[in-house]
Length: 243
Image 1 (tube, helix red, strand yellow):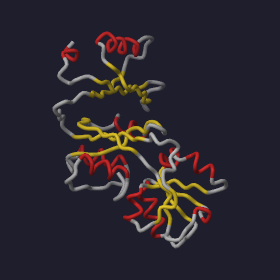
Image 2 (spheres, rainbow, N blue to C red):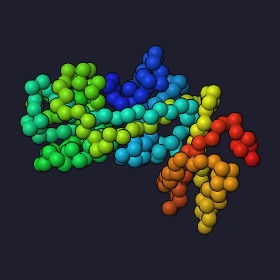
Image 3 (cartoon, rainbow, N blue to C red):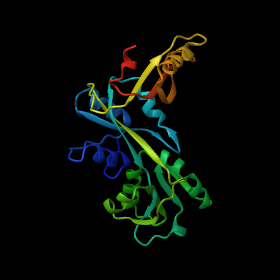
Image 4 (cartoon, helix red, strand yellow):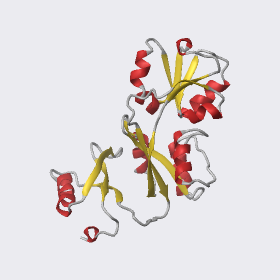
C-alpha cells in the first residue's frame, strides 16, 4: 500500500531486493491482490513500537484467506520535508499518515498552533507537498522521499523515540515455510463463556511456548464477541506443536 518512497516500499525492497512492485491505494487492495492471484506476495505494516497495532490491517485479516510467510522489523526515522528554501518557522501545516503523526506527536506539539492533516500514506504526503505551490506546507516522511520528490529535509529524526520500529508482514495465498522459521501466528475464536481464553493460554504455558503478542479483534456481526490473534515463538519443527 502506498507509492514510491513509502515505508512499505522500503520494507518490500528489503524483503525482495529484485522484485516488481505493484502499489495499491489501501490495505484492502493488497489483501485482494494476493487472494485473487494478481500478486504472489503482499507486504503490510502490522504494528509499531510507539503507536501500537495497525488496527485496519487486523480488521482485514478476519475477512481474507492468506498465510503469513515472512516478516521484517524496520527502523522508522521520520523527517520534516518541505520545498527548497522553506524554513521550520515558515510551516503552518503538516501532512502525513495518521501513524506517523502519532509517532511524532511530541515534536508537532512543540511547534505550537499548527494545522495537522491526515493523508493515506507518508510518501503521498511528500508528493502532495512537492506538487503544491505553497511554501508553508510540510510533510512527515522518510529521508528517501526527499530525494524522490525533490524536497529539503528541514529536520531529521522527529519521532517521539529513537527505538521506533514497525513490523511488516509478508502474506501469500499459499503456505510457505523457510528454514529456521521460529514464529507462528494464528487467529482463533473461543467459545463465549468464562475461562475460554484462559484455557487456551494455559495450553501455551503448559507447552512452554513463549507468546509474544495477543490482540483481540471484535467480530462485527456478533455482539461483544472477539477473534484473538496470537504470535508465539517456537520452531515450526518443534514436537510441542504435535501435542
